[in-house]
Image (tube, rainbow, N blue to C red; front, side, top):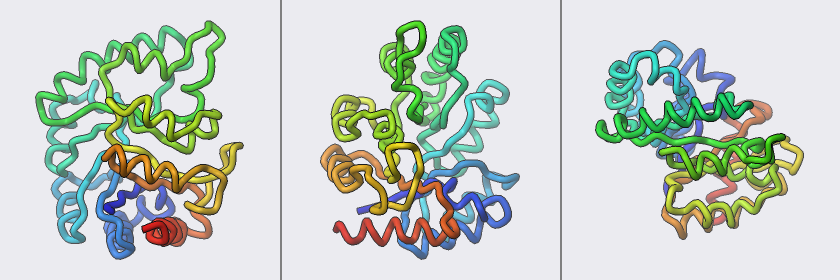
Length: 239
C-alpha cells in the first residue's frame, strides 16, 4: 500500500522547515504528500525536496483565488511540482449566492485545468452535508452542478452522521482520493486507530475502489511528527 500524508498534519513545523518535514514523512514510509501551502518556496525548490526524499505530490490544498488571480502562474507552479490534483480545501459557501458564484467559477476553471493535465477537486468538512435554511445541501449542489471531483474527507462525513463507506460507494465515479482520519463524533480529531471513526473499513473500501489514501491527523499531539508516526504504524498493523 502507498499512503499519502496531508502536510497540514505537520503544521507545527512545515512553515519553518518544509524540507525537514518532508524528510521526516519519507523516513516514516509515506510515499505521497498533499501540500497545504508552500511557505514562500519556489516550485523548483519544492520539486527538488520531493525528489531528494523520493516523494511524489499527490495533490495540493489550494484556494480557488490563486487560479482566479494568476491562472498561468499557478498552473506553471503546480505542473513544476508534478501536481495533477488541485483540491479546494473548503470555501465560503454560506449563502446560495456565494455557492452559485463558486460553482460558476469552478465550471469555468475545470476544463482549462484539465487541458493542462490537472483536475479540479473539492474537499468537504461536515457542514456541506447539513441542510441549509433554504432546504438544499451544499455537497448535493456541488455533486449536481459543479465540474469537480471529490476528495471525500471520510472523518468529516462521519461527524455529519453519514456512513463514510456508503458515501465512498455513492460518489465512486467522482472520487479520486480520500482523507483517512480518525476522531470522535463531535469533531475532535485523534491519530488513526484512537477514535471511533470506521478507519479500517474506510481503508478497505478505498483499496477496493482503487482511490488514493491520504492520511490527515490534526492534533499535533504532542507534535505533528509523533502523531503521523502513530498513524502509519496503525496502518501497517492492518496490512
